[in-house]
Length: 436
Image (tube, rainbow, N blue to C red; front, side, top):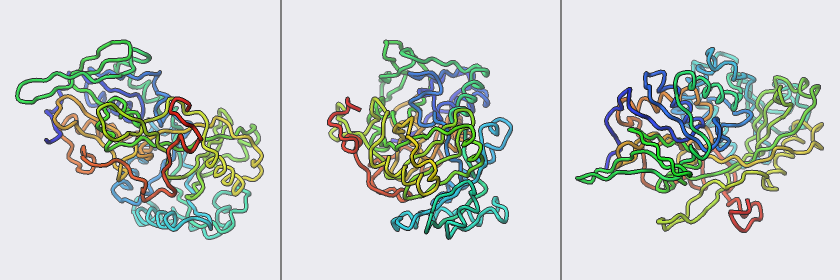
């Protein structure tokens, strides 16, 4: 059955479930487009701590193996440079490399990503610098004093990072000023979709029920729950798989923050990546690269297990701590003895081809999903709401790759990631989901 509906009227009630990247960007754009009855609900204060985007910072770059997303990211970067978003964007540049131990997959992915943008007219002459040695790397990032022997890759000046949580806070504040209603806590914790069946097989979604029994009714419900979407809509777990990656920080002094100021985002494909330290907190964020972790559980009514986020995200696997420590010793050895703090696993909603899903649910009126972030959606924050609004206004998704699909979710072999997917319980030596 095709997934489409009638265009939504401007005065119709719209319920957005989830106050993260997709939810806030959608609310913002729909408000700009004249929709006047929008409610965003979430189980925590917006921006939600359950959103992968509610983080210190996120990479903003246009390198993709797929030119389709490269062009979308270039447009997003233009928006990051506008007055509305510019205070939350830092164009430090992006140093991408592989170490001598990198597998061939990492080498191939790096070359494909560079090829997608290096000849694009959006990049001025001199936007890229080849890196073939430690000397080249230090020339692009003089604050790095590590060995980096044998590193190779490139430096992209037309990239940087977003102050992620602050950008989401700005979007939420603006939505509130435009009349969007926010409901959080138990009143906003959706646990069950509400439906009404009609003649001739029609099924209509009428809203959601929350954990305290409150029912919200809406003409159009949009699920923007990221990695958590399978808990409310289990059938999407065949398309969206919850996967997690490890994040940690080191605490720097004011003097050290100044020394590392304007450091580009550094991404060693086979180790991990890091950002310049946050000027407010002195925290320098690092993340381990890898294929990700799953958390399989049994879902009522489904023969196969599905992966959903764990109740707690504190702590990271030992193997990722070692990767992060190797990254530090390779690039910033003076911080090698520094304790890793604020360690957590970040859950994303992964799809088989890293494509987003922005579409109506087949066979159901009044229900739409917007997600499948696949670990690369935050940079699209300024524009993702436009894509959602277009579907709402047109009544159907015209971009085939973003339509609802039948079939398996993300596999272990995502072309731009290295390593093997493991279950988080195994990686952290846990026996039950409740222990995490």
